[in-house]
Image (cartoon, rainbow, N blue to C red; front, side, top):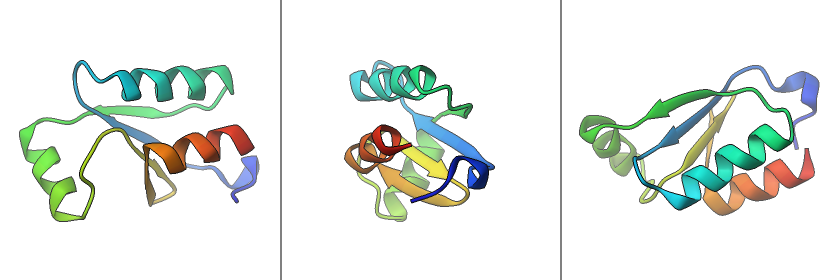
Length: 78
């Protein structure tokens, strides 16, 4: 688990009209976690699919990418 001091770069990859994406944004904000938002277009979605990610949102923390359930767990534990 990353300590707050170790969290340097957080990127949230989302798609339009995604309830899970909206929920994760809300939870990150509630915890006061700053993040860059990347709304994925078709090209980025294809890239993520090639990397093995089959759904949004994807949370990237210091280069470690995680899917929704893992991201929710991480946010709850920070």
